[in-house]
Length: 133
Image 1: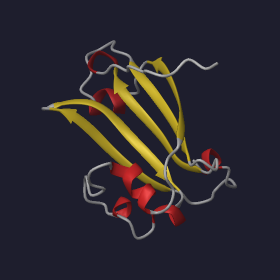
Image 2: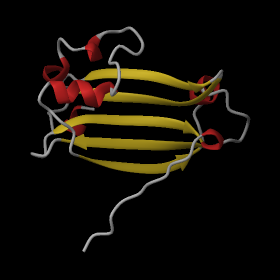
Image 3: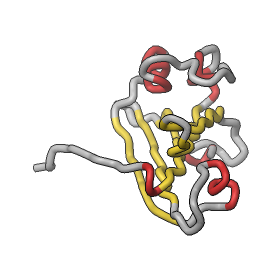
Image 4: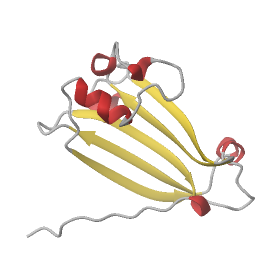
């Protein structure tokens, strides 16, 4: 994960993992990674589920002076690992969608790397954006 931040191999990063459910059905996992110096002393290092509050990690980063400005998301599909099938309660043969997100400040500093594993039948993406000149 250090490489995602342009840090040397083996550099420490902070990991925040969660399982997201709709009712009783798990829809996806999402694990965010941060530079320790960006999140030390914030609710993101609290191991209690959901401590970041309204706006989540992006609100916390903004309060740290690291306002998210842009992100790049890459999405692909694959068959799940046995652990992913169990965690997401997937029926046999259901694929997962993998999301990788990199979030940057206006100055281009990488402030979050996230990876999600989504049950293909329980999740959808929709994007709206301006067409460039």
